[in-house]
Length: 196
Image 1 (cartoon, helix red, strand yellow):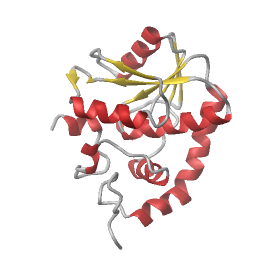
Image 2 (cartoon, helix red, strand yellow; image 1 turned 90 degrees about the horizontal axis):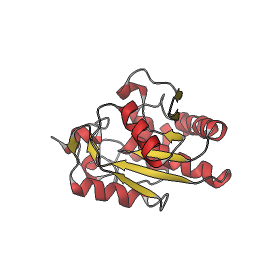
Image 3 (cartoon, rainbow, N blue to C red; image 1 turned 135 degrees about the vertical axis):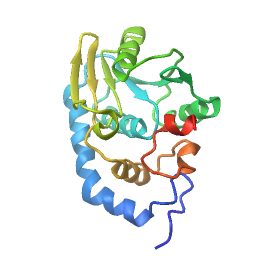
Image 4 (cartoon, one colour; image 1 turned 60 degrees about the vertical axis):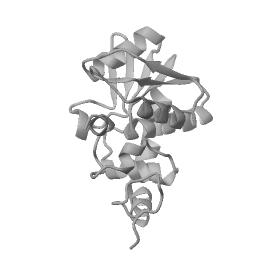
């Protein structure tokens, strides 16, 4: 088998393998994620974007918005907790995000936990729903739907694993920031790569 020749993805995944994973596992999970968003989206919508997982959530949100029109914005945090992400990574994320929406907000404040970051996004930018790319494997005991005093948090890919994320990205030919392509492991988070 030949390694994946697509320059957007790490070479350790074979394209045929990603295609098979999409067909066997991800297509059904994608439909469940779309249904979750369709049934629970409320008011102004912000999609929190910080890496490969949230690019999947953004893509799914955009496809739902085509079927059931609603406006949404992508919100990119320039920080990971208290560390500023390198400028080239932020610029790459913005470029990728613009494939899905022209409404891009760059949030330039430090934060200390995902829940706090999502609250900041909701209160500062007026969102009543935040869609995230949180996955339980990396982010602990979150649920697909979480209600807070500031609004609703939807985690449509909460039950996906890293291979399923890569299969989705491959299927829709969604680019990822360069640091992922140079990574040794497919499950590595953008923030871990940015500060190595």
